[in-house]
Amino acid sequence: MAHRLFEEKYHASIYQKYRIIPPDRVTRLILEYLDKKKGPPHELAVDLGCGTGQNTRLLAPHFQKVVGIDVSECQVEEARAVPGFANVTYRSGPAEELPFPDGSVDLLTAASAAHWFDTERFLKEAARVLKPHGCIALLGYADEFRLYYGSCGDKLNNICAEVKKVSKRYASPQLAASDNRLRVLFEDIPFPDKERIERIPLKMEMTIAAAVGFLESFSYCQTYFKTDPQAAAALLESMRTRLLEEMGVSSPDTKLEFTTDFYCVLACKPQ
Ligand SMILES: C[S@@+](CC[C@H](N)C(=O)[O-])C[C@H]1O[C@@H](n2cnc3c(N)ncnc32)[C@H](O)[C@@H]1O
Image (tube, rainbow, N blue to C red):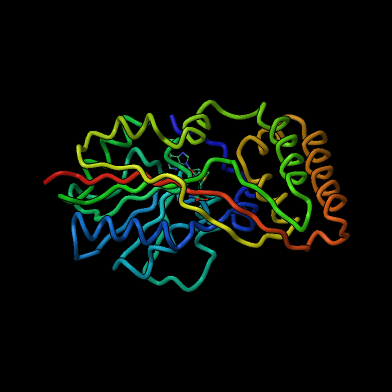
């Protein structure tokens, strides 16, 4: 059964606004791996659990065709609304039943999504649709981001840790797989040729409002909102106010430094 925590329009819209885009280095690593293992032509890439298409669009310059697939129609609608990517299309559907013939896909990616899939059915489907030497790339980040500003030291991170502690009571069990950087799923991949890349750093500027929005986009925060909307809204409002106070600024558009690191699981289908 698919996990359907990302269905609502509001959740999809904050995804589009606040989710971070994988750093260039992750995309480069994936493409280099595909080149090393399979080589050209790069005809078809499929991004599973594409959400609003952050990772899908990064693949567009490197493939004749890119298809983003997500079980949530609202997420796919947001993705389709982004103009300027003529070779990218989106479809709603599950990662465990893909609308592609056997041996037709060069690259299958999933960004911050594979922990939601039914592992056994997804891996079976991946083995079916990939071309010989086609590759899987599962990328993501745990929610261990850090915020820095001036001389605030760890104070901003302590505020985030407190907010996460409260809202993570609403986390689904599947999130443990993401926090564990897909270690179990990695073991289950039936292809002998596979590797993990840990800790690919991302450092970027982000506004205070975006940092709060980023946290709000996590599924556990959305579940908290559904369960107790007033308490969840008050928690995020207090996060915003406390960040402003610690930073000694009044505008939520003030920029701070945001860091996290990505991981990537790579695997190549045998001949
Ligand atoms: C955390 S979001 C990641 C979205 C996007 N890839 C990103 O990098 O921000 C996970 C996405 O996976 C989708 N999803 C969950 N289970 C799925 C499944 N079985 N098949 C396809 N998509 C699924 C959700 O609807 C959601 O949009």
